[in-house]
Image 1: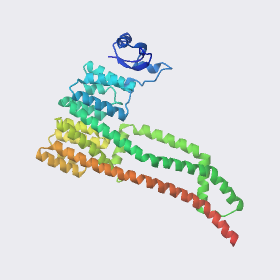
Image 2: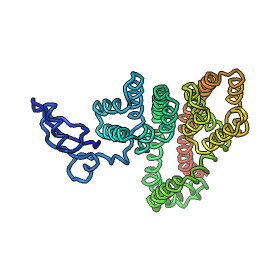
Image 3: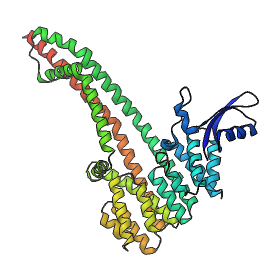
Image 4: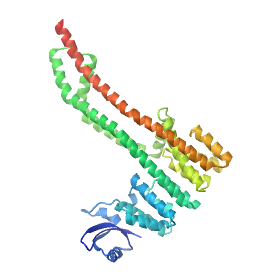
Length: 408
């Protein structure tokens, strides 16, 4: 059923706007009058972008939710479905309460697809930017196993945890980032406006300048004459690299590099293993068949190279191999995870074993992230301080040489 964005007036004269679901604009106006609202404008949500002077609402097919919005919506759906409310009714209730028209439009569009006979996961597939691949794969596994409520609860926890970790990381890196930007800005200003004036003094006296000073003068001249072009070239290179990295094959190469490089290998494998183990544990606990659970858990892993290996594990399990054997052959997950999986399979308690492994991996990952973040700030201070020190030395060395010449 189509969704319409409306503006209406209450009996008190207060203005109200939102999203309403109806068969036609006339039916939408009738529903508003039934709610004691005076319709001021009723427009199809997908057409509002075409009219100038109205509030922009992204196209339903291309809309995207923020991580916080996705976490809130998932928690609401999980709570309502866990209370034995049908999915389509839960979507309607959440859309009616949403304060963000774009989110309400997406949910009503998903509800309409379900009412047309499509599965929940298939309906979510209409909005791949709002509902990521791992989200849809987990929902599909939950629907097939009849444990949708449990899977949705896991998804809510997972998305909320990811959003919280992302927010903590952003806040922790905010000060070092501001420090680096301000310091670089000040250095550039000194190179453009201060260094040239000092150079004039040295040149007028005919002093023999040391290498460090000559290098500073050359860098200052380059920034002053070609700095803008260099910045534009860097921006163009960044954009070209972004387009190149969006190609699936190129992205796979980048992710393989992160996973195999000595600098990033530990963090990448720890991060992806934690995501994989946590999702697999929840799906296995929800009685999802192991092969389907492996496919859904593979979709959760953000690294394409690790995801490819996880899908290889699923193929080996389908052929009759044990999960431990498949993980050992992949050589991509930490040995601790493989050992815990082996003990869980031998004892017949795979899900609890995976949960323990996921918790341990998350603790190790949190400690690793905290260490890396703690090192960023002093590293930025050392780098910026070193650059300033080089500038000071480059300026002081000629002055010292001039004083030595005078005393001689």
